[in-house]
Every structure is written in C-alpha cells, then in structure tokens.
Length: 198
Image (tube, rainbow, N blue to C red; front, side):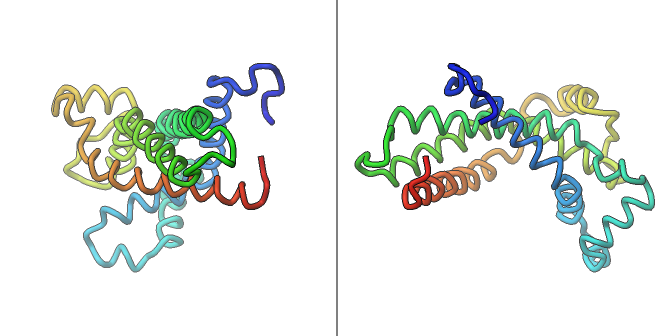
C-alpha cells in the first residue's frame, strides 16, 4: 500500500491513491489518446489511411517529443480528480452497502455502487475533460479559436459561449460511463471474490 498508517482507509488516502493511479496510467498512454482525439474529428478519408503510427510520425516531425504531450497538463488536471473521485466513491459506497463478500445480492450492489461512482465522478469532472479536448483539437481546425492554455480556454468558453458550453455532450458521456463503470467494478469485485483477494 502507498500509505501505511492509521489513516490508510480514509477517504483522503483513497483519493490520493486514485489520483496517482490516474496520472501514471494516462501519462503512459497519453500519446495514443491524443491520436485518438485527432482521428475522431478527421473528415478527410486520407487522414484515416495514415493510421496511428502515421499520425505519431507527423506529430513528432512537426513538434518533436513534446508534441506527444500537447494538452497533458490539462488532461492531468481533469483525469486525476476523475479517477480519484471514481475509486474513492466506489470504496466508500462498497464499504457502506457491501461490507463483505457474503453480503446478499453482492453483484447487484457492486453494479449499483459502480454506476453511482461513474456518474458522480463524470459529473464532477466533465468540464475539465471538455476543455482538454478543445485544447487538443484547437490547432487542427483553421476556424477554431486557438487557446494559449487551460485558463485561456476556460475564459474564452465562458465569454463567447456561456457557462452551458462546459456541459456540451455530458448526457451521452454519462450514458456510456454508468454501465461501463458499473461493469468494471462489479466484475473486478466478483473476480476478487472468486480468487479470495482482499
């Protein structure tokens, strides 16, 4: 365990562990997330033919190694609290409603706790995720408003589009996140039960 003291089970410790987990995983995979975002908005079929490796080469040739981490800081500002809130919320709910592996309706309770954790974490951090995507894509669209960073993007969105712009696309995201997180945690808890893992 990362924190070995009397507060190891505290909500703050769970938040910290979740945040560090999210930062580590997303730092390693960030270049692929960047390419995925770029490919998801390409309208020209020729861009698809370049594929992942092709786009990685283009980014490297234009911007060097730092180009792979464009928008990384903004992503970490969003992903660290997202993972932290998701994992800590699930742990708290599981402790409250499913304290041991012999709890009746074990799987259904874990599904419900996972769904709630996903909805709460996505709702709390969605604006930061949206800002991250705006910054990643700003340089690709000639008609898009360029951003100098996180704060500039937030201020521009507020001034030109209003506060509702921070929640564009939230509903489809939550509809995807609820079942995904519910299944993730429920399957994880079921496997831990089968393998007698604490």
